[in-house]
Length: 372
Image (cartoon, rainbow, N blue to C red; front, side, top):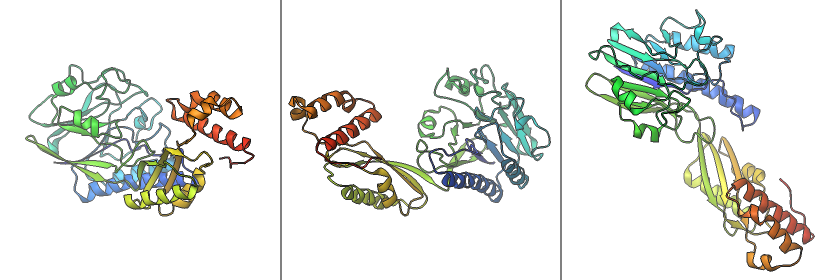
């Protein structure tokens, strides 16, 4: 049988950090990615669609999103199984408990107690549970095993395999192994490579189908699973419209903004980034004390051809620390006052101290640097 395993879709996400217009476009693209997954399930004759939690970003769901789900699910001939997660729990006010919202082929877990749906044509039983509130501190699999090992048994669940004391549905390795499913369709972890590598059972975290911020970098999608009682095969299918990427850029020795602009453009060109990329570049290294980096202007000048470019400045000025430390005048005093910030382990503290020293030194020299 063929299964499309997805989750952590987070429909109606706010996409904070972007302009209102760009955020609105990203929300539309997230809906489009969801529609693409449904179309893929339909055209590939998928036997089962599994959604392992967090279909919505919050329990509040817009009418447009409900209409989209009703329309898309109704185009499928296969069963759809949904296990609500911590962002969209099946509490008393949730859409999951309302009648006549979704087509008959949609099956939803609404209790934090383990239960199942049996699909006779597939000889397949899908187990699962729902978050009933934003946290779930017990493991619903404790002491449980599949009812009939001759069937194909699947667990569709939102949970955390990384910590046995997680507030997000702990799924310890021992409980998963004892349960005895043929495939574990998991959700909750958006960047799943490390978590999947640590799994000791046949299954996967699907990750999210569309990155929503710079903590969710790289190509995103869903998992296509081919499964029988003897073995299973997984393939990651891309559905994301955009990709978030982060890069560090060494700006050592830069004396003017144009030098940094040239280096940023070279980085973008060499990486082959295009209009499907949201890119964050963090500038590091030591630069001229007289240089005040205008990150907004840099992003505007270098961002052509990208969907979004954000530049962060973590550079430090190349002061002669020994001379400033021995200076008994105003410059030396400024340096000594700001030194704890300049040497802080906190990047934000270092940036604040560096900028303060630049502005103060320029003022003492009778110069004015542009403020960001």
